[in-house]
Length: 169
Image (cartoon, rainbow, N blue to C red; front, side, top):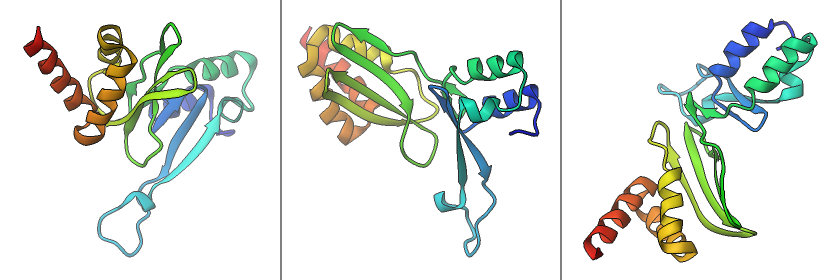
């Protein structure tokens, strides 16, 4: 990135595979796929950069603009919702640790993980629904939802849980 202007770097950040917490993953070469007809995940090269790498060589104003831009998280253009805390329970969304555009929803209570699910991008923001499950059913509701999400996916699990709740009410 050292040879690029602040504007060129900003464009790369906006188009990056993912940006989260001051780090970005750039797709360097998605066309490299020897020996196969269709590209697979082994054909994509991602470069991970932090805010220091991304702003190196810029003047103070340009470096600040790049660092600020790196705080606006997204995966394949879909914004990451801001973390939510309700008492000791923390709801967080980050780029998934897998190939492909996906987000990881993580709900923790201190050191205990209540829910962890990966959702492909694009999708509707599911964080408000997770907070609602917590407010209606507490930690037990989130751990039950985690089991359903492992089986059906998080969006479907939330829909099923909503239908169950409506049928009981």
